[in-house]
Length: 342
Image (cartoon, rainbow, N blue to C red; front, side, top):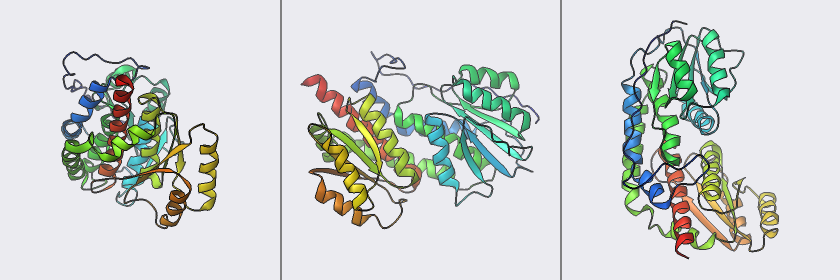
């Protein structure tokens, strides 16, 4: 592949006055979490602009496939990108984690995503792709991957390393979607991002005072959170819910598929019965989930005492995924606030 040079500085919004960056193992303070959520619409737009302004894009001619490499949240982002593009892209777009597949060739574009840039597995996968792919584009804030990308002379889309959970997921998804649109592999992504940012900005006005957010903050302490969802978007939203409830809200949480019948309901009930105070069943719903789920949900409502259903707002999978993650942020913030005031 022919190397190019582009290593712009990472765009960062100022942190709230008096706040500090939490360590890798320290959860965000409630005020910081709320502030990061309020900045999300602007962060999404900034990320999209950074990808739209990227110079030295690789030549799309001859590219017949795209591989998205990344671990952790970036792997989740890759799976979401694959799901969004599955029925819309003109070439196969596949997320493979931190593995560079054997099929990567001089007809493959490799997009390497690591917001922190410090995962050695991702750097190794990028090195493997460098030797075989048609071209590489890196999405990162720096770290070892940023240093390596500068040495290789490959294009870099800068992202904010201090983004909150929802923005962090957007930081990994949005630039890849915009790049794929610029290369002609999928259309409408810039509009999709803009619409998602607008919808989230409107949602913020009532988010933290939402009746369901308040209800969950009251029900969850002392109980297990049984977070259920269906489809690719739901699966990844539920994964974020479990992470936020556990690491930020201090609530034991597990992820299960949305009940489709009595077997799923019974399995969830057995899990709830092992806990002292039972479980709260959280149903995450979105427009892209498969059909035929209402019967299982009705059975679950009959079996569980505490059921909270969250319907994603917004149009399209990106907006709805970020909306569900945003609600998880709000619930986690409400739980932390409740814990500090009790």
